[in-house]
Image 1 (cartoon, rainbow, N blue to C red):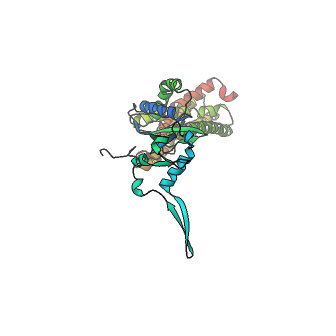
Image 2: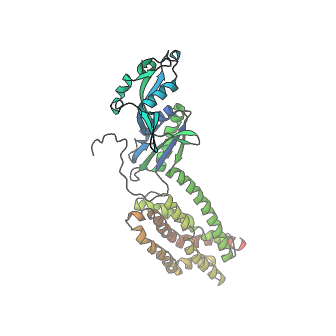
Image 3: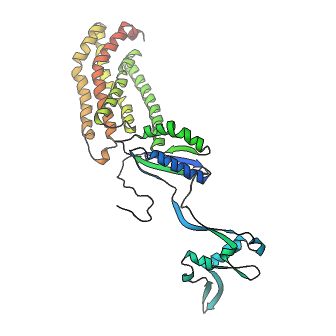
Length: 381
């Protein structure tokens, strides 16, 4: 697009379906604004080296140009104060009510100020005169020292501390947010705290939300496993067979990882949600096999005879149970629309998790059941 005058930051974005905010949202906290600025520059330059980091920017936006004035030495001996100088400048540029007249029923205020032609450039300040307490006048440049500067449009504060935020998006084809943060903590942060000991780093956006969600998912996953075990204990009236049924769950995770590799997508939060959901889905196949084994044992077959028949005779039932679930998710997995992109990792976890667990279950459940029977755990536990 070429050079655009007065533009500070320009970015092009597309709609993204995500509940977590920006992929990278790093906050620097401290009281020294100058140190915060230099720290933000160092962090900006470090993040810029990653190819997949896009639209990197901070919230230190320059404000309007301003002139800072301070009294020269000797101004106080003339009886001048900074309040007096400020009041005269305000009156000259913004006006002051000099009188009020009454015309019939209407009252009019008479404001006095400099003409527009005398206040349209900074050079007019060089010709401005300050009235001293004794009535004499002195050029403004003789009583004050003027410094041209430019501050910041906004200074954010969190819990009373000045804060500078650096935000960016991540192109998942070239970079991963978790890997970038891991490198930041391992490589950048040790030197950073040595150089800026009074500045603290915190994370927000996707990083913070992911940590919160992971903790919540782990807690919910544990509660779900306990609930599944309790229900299966009532079903089989034993504590050993629920363990055999739940062996399918870790095999499902192998399928989740494999499926993401095949589809070329990163394991993300929706992926983990899909895996947690698998805990209650993949046990269905195991229940079919364990119930078959239990029935054959009650009919007088040995554990080894029951195991050898399980995979062969329950193959069709197990495969149909899994394939019907997979078939229902295939349309979502092959969807190309933007609205579905957030759900595709979830669907991939479920589809490939079920597929892997089904193949393992047909072989491993009879084997594990035979081992438990050989150790006499099924009758004792």
